[in-house]
Structure formats: structure tokens, C-alpha cells
Length: 468
Image (cartoon, rainbow, N blue to C red; front, side, top):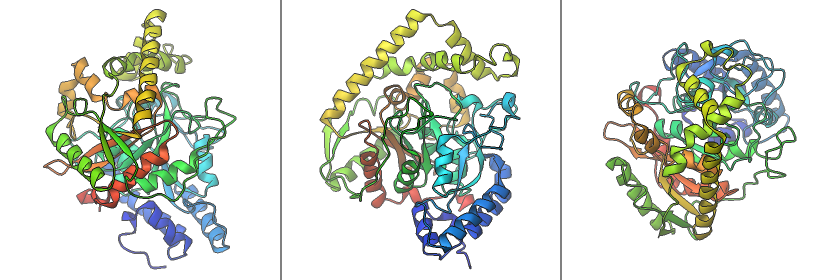
């Protein structure tokens, strides 16, 4: 078959239609992706490891099945990639940690297995921060933002964001503990869903903090993200915290806001938020109204304490997750992850209980607010496309760091679903992200809102100049 020269720019759902109609071959699409990775990822560092033999084998199997008329799912034959904290049978899974650099799992994580069962093609494992916390281990190079090398690519699913934006896969599977799907999505002009906690099994995924970790997709559109999420949802007997019998059935979706009530807290989304983000959110609000939505002024429950507490909340659970290797092998850990674990180990039980009580207060208050509205509109972060220099300046200011995660981490604590999506660009062409936060189990409504915005904009279709 003769492949279109811009095949790598297609959204997943469009490629799926071409594959299912036999207009393109999964093998040729996979070969093209592997060539693109080989040519471009040497400067981007988005892949921890590429699996070409497995990818081509899976692509061939998909092609043979499709030729027989056997269609497993919308992602059948689609080349994807997974964050390097998901166990992959026979393939190194290190969690961004040199200490696990030779760890080879015997079985797939449930989410990976569901992707394979749906017929997806695995291109490889994507780079990430150490243990899924703030920064990479000093021995591992950072993934480079394809929109601008001097700008933050998000944490910790950085490889997912970079590879998907640079067209080195058609979508990816990541995790979000304090914003690590939504930050890379915003930084790279993508759409990412942090689902309801328990919607996707965490079996076979490295823990950062078990009650805060969420498994979800990063993709090029809200439609693509929902397709990927639907492939991995449902109860898993191997994960007792996965929600019972709760698969995700996706009905036909109206790409508008008719009948939807969108809550906006003007004070919350403007205080300390860069003006360019505020202006783009105002543009989104106008679009919501034009598309039939009702915008309602609300007061979001105070996020200051729950976001200020997030690092200690996370640290206690991270200390438990790493107790077999820390502190006995502490010298092999990087400074950021070590500091997090030390904080968790030192926190008193009484202080941790106070954190849990505040988390419950916030959770209940959010549930109550989301009885009044269907969705909450927010930015992903207050700082538009931060440079590494700006982040370094913020590093010594605890209040600045609290503000950085105030729109993301609280909803890891409460477990509400949220979708990050592009809302425009800065003056120098860097992406800006907004998000919709929904009711628990309301991923379809969250995605509907994202699809409605993307129906009337092309922000999500823009590609980094050097990677079109």
C-alpha cells in the first residue's frame, strides 16, 4: 500500500477507520512509526526502550485478523506506547529507576493486557521521572518538550506527552498521582484523562501513592482519549480497589454543551494565574455558551490545605511502596525521591490523620458541588508553559509549588475524573492547557465537553513545527 506522507499526523480514530477499511496496513503504519522513532527520538529521549520485534509481530497478527474480518476494537492495529511503570512480560520495566534497570516482569499489567487483548501494537516503553515523582533520576536524561527544548514537558508521564506530541505513537498510557497525565498533556498540546479513582486497574503498575495513583491515556484529541480509556476500564480481580463491574460503555456523543451546567469559580481560576491563561479560559467560556451550555458561578471548596498537604500525603504512601529497597539502598536513589520518602517516614501518625481528615472534607465538598453542576472548568496550572529557569526559581518557594499543583493534585485526593485539553498558545507558540473536572464515573460527560471544544477549534490538531 502507498502510505500518505502525513499519516503520522492522523488522530487515532481516523487511523482506525483507515485500518478497518483496509486502506492502510497495520504493518506499514508500524514500520513508519519505528522509522520515525529511530530518526527523531535521539534528541527527544521520550522512549526508555523501543520494542520493534514485538511491535511488528503484533502488527502482523492484527493485519491477518483484520483481513479475515476479525475486528477486536477501535484500537486494533494502532501503534501505541506505555509509560515505563507498567509491567510488560519479558520486557524490562524500571519505573524510571536505575535500581530496577534489569527488572523483567513475568506478566503484563492489567491495563497493558487489556490493550493487547484489544489488538493494540506496542511500540515500546516511555521514559518517566524516577518512581513517578517530580524529576528524573540524575543518570537518566529528561524527555525534551518538542514545542521548545527549554520548557517543562510535565511530570511524570513526560515520555507519554513528548512521544504523542512528536507523532512517535498515536496515543499512550500514563499515570497521574498529582497531575502527571494533565501536566504533560498541557505542556505538549494534548488531551489526557485522569479517570475516577478505581476506574482502571493499577495491578502491575509501580506505585507512587496507592490512594492517589490513577491510570489513564494521553492522546491527540478528546475522542482518542476516550477510546483508549474505554479499552482499559473495568473491574479486575487482581486489584481489590478497582471498581466492581464498571466498564466504560461509550454511547453516541453529542459534541455540544446543550443541557450541561459548567461551574466557574472566577476567583479560583484567576488568582495568581498568568494573564494569558485567564484570557484563553474566557475564550473557552464564550464557546461553552455559544454551544448551548449554561455557565454558573460557583465557589470551589478551598484547595489550599489539600494541595499543601499533597506531598506529605504522597510521601507516607511512597515510603510504604519502597520499604523493601529504602533506606537499605538509599544511595541508589535520586535526591527528589529520597527527600519525598524521608518526609513520609518522618511524619507522625497524628499529622497523617489530620491530612486524611482534610482529604475527606474536600472529597465530600466536591461531591456536593458536583450535584449542583455537571463540570468544573479550570486551568491545568497557573504558569503558562514554564521554562526550566522559572521552575528552578519556584523550587525554593513552598507556596509557589502549592499553587503549581492546586488545580490538579486535589482531584487525585478526591478521585474525581478530569480531562486536560489544549486551550490555545502563548505569544511564543507554546501550548496552554485547561481542564474539565467531573462527577465520579462521569468520564463520558467530561470527554463530551472536550469534544465540543475541539469541534470548533483546531488547537488540538497543531503539531510542533519540527515534528509535523
